[in-house]
Length: 116
Image (cartoon, rainbow, N blue to C red; front, top):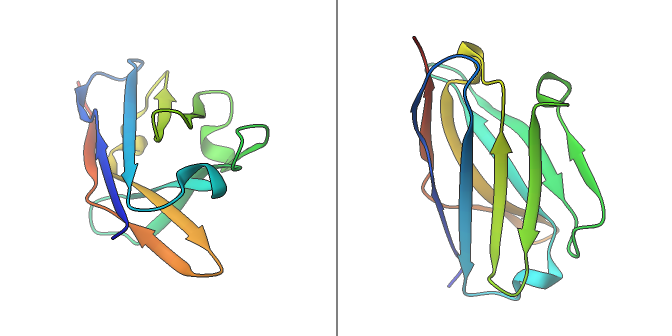
């Protein structure tokens, strides 16, 4: 069974930093690109960033470029999202997801709140 568990969220002041982690089980993690998604309160699900299967290539939504960094450790079956210079508009539930021809699989999210 595919399981994705995100953690690391919390309350942070504007300009602060957080590191999110996502532990994957139940599938060959190193064979899949992985993605971070987020959903702000009252809004739809938005794309944040993707990393390819071996970590060589990354893509980001424009609003987080230069502030967020996606990475992965295939030996630990874990993906990360380092978030710096956080803004109130980054407030959202963050989900890690496996997006492939097999469909979208995402786990429980972790809440990030950016507020003074």
